[in-house]
Length: 400
Length: 227
Image (tube, helix red, strand yellow):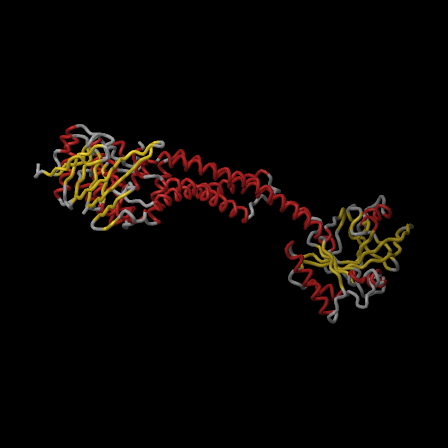
């Protein structure tokens, strides 16, 4: 018997036992669909967490001068004074790397802030317009340092500073003296509390050029870099290190920190969770496999006379084994396909019900679900098929 | 063409051995029309099954077309069954899911013949056995006579050299049974060896050679001229 004939004959058999076939396909399909939907849920949760992290600066890399290993024994590192400093030129270099979306150089110092008849010491950050998107900071009033405003004397006040200096009137448009220079208040930060070691409520931010002039330095305290995407973080880190090594005459005298460590942990936990859920769903596939075995065993005893007849008209044991085998393969195959579609449909419903949850089943889960369904179906048919093949022709024929 | 030497077949009923066939020596030439008669339990069906390679003897030698088959592998025996032997059963043994045409086609499918060729052969058989109108009917929609005609068409589709019929009219009324026997006898006239097992004396008497069996042994073996 040719393979095509075997497949066709067993396909007709599957069709002719309609209800039985539908039920077994349904059982198999539910198993596959469970794998697809549950992994979609698990992976969706994972992506949801990653997205949440991204919104507070996940793709953030911080470049600081000095090597992490030497920081402890190297007093200069604490003050940002390494043999070779980070400069604005370094920062601009990093901004041109393909993995980098934007960068914000950072200088930190302290200066006296005075307006009307108030005066206080404040922490001064020097940066550029990108600081706001990179650090996901928000403004309550006005604008941040506009792009290209590095050379204009603007200042952004922390929430607390603004309310201290301008308790009644609007801060925007007011002039204020910082150190020896006068600045125009262009915006006020929203209250965010502690972040990266600063209380952002009690800082002021000015353009980097003014900060460097004010503190009489050309070196940078930090460079904040945002990678283009989550997957670009590691490449960006390598590219930054390589590019700085090149411009620093081949010396590894900078350190790049990523905020990725916590995220990686979450990622691992949720991945493991997804796997566990997929494993549990796979149990239903095994159950479906046993169901296939049971149905095929019943089919063998139902069709004993038919098997005897097939032997009488010249079917070999191999032919008969293949016929039953192919029947089980058809059933599992149909179950896997229907289950996959059902699972995709279920994921779609999940996404419609919870739009913020990206419930897409990962490809590996769909493929694994289908393969496990096929393999269990095939394994489950081995026993019935060989039972059919071993039947004694004479005894089989005498059965009605 | 069929040569049985000292064939023995034993069944075990509990701890008792029952001889279904006891030292059978039989030679059937090509083109013969043989009836095997005897009461139930006489071993006539077992003999037929051994000739048809469905059953294996416990002892003795079976030569078909001068080839010893007793020791052939299961696959080889299945091939011989497919190519040289056609079975006709009392209860027809049609596959209930398949149409008349598909039932007739089965041996061709098993032999691996391409579908186009199969179609031609099945059409010829449907024509020859006057089943053209019933080709797409399932066995449950056919009369007893039609079912047996389908079974005979299936048994002959591979153009076997031997037709083995086990009580072919047992489930049919007298007139239909006679028609079926005519069909089988026509095949014999075409040169096929025909072996019919029956307990019906009248039916057995139509054969040119009549073998009577009892308790697993051949009692009488008589040859008549065309009767």
